[in-house]
Image 1 (cartoon, rainbow, N blue to C red):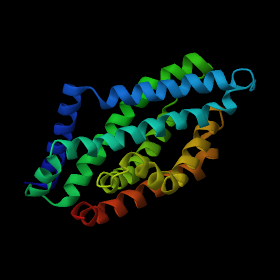
Image 2: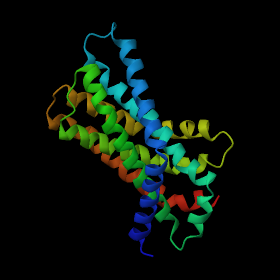
Image 3: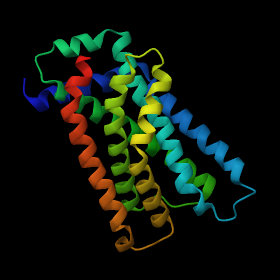
Image 4: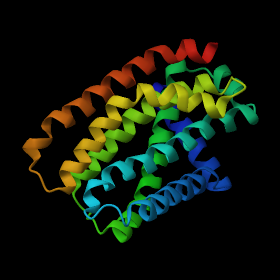
Length: 223
């Protein structure tokens, strides 16, 4: 089985499972929606300019929902006994990581696209900028790259629901800072030249995170 054929098989399996159960996307959307609503009422009377808080609230909603989805991606595999089946498949362990990474990025992106209009309604912002969605995609890839690796570690622990955020958020600080600052500058209408530093940081983090997790996933999953 070729590398990309194995990756496509894993992605197709995850998508088909989600279409049948509708658990992950539904939970991610509701969690992100509630985060947006809570922050909206919390800051409504305290902040006159919504653009000051929207970038932070946006990424809090995205990351909290993302943690929920990342955790469920491997919990479902363990509960159904699919991890053993994946490890017995005639493919390299990196195929499993790449497939799970692409699935997680896809699910997070869909949840973000569903939640983004809520921020338009609540905070009166525009989300039509292509650069904004490039930033969201880069931030999602970096967050999911680290999160997929740590989710594979946390799923085998007793406190897996607590362990994943503990491991993930400190490692994801650079990508979250860069994504939040880039989002703030885009919403404030700054030119693209002002974003170059943060975009480079996002891209560099994505490359380092994906390569590092890709190379180390074999040792993680074996343990």
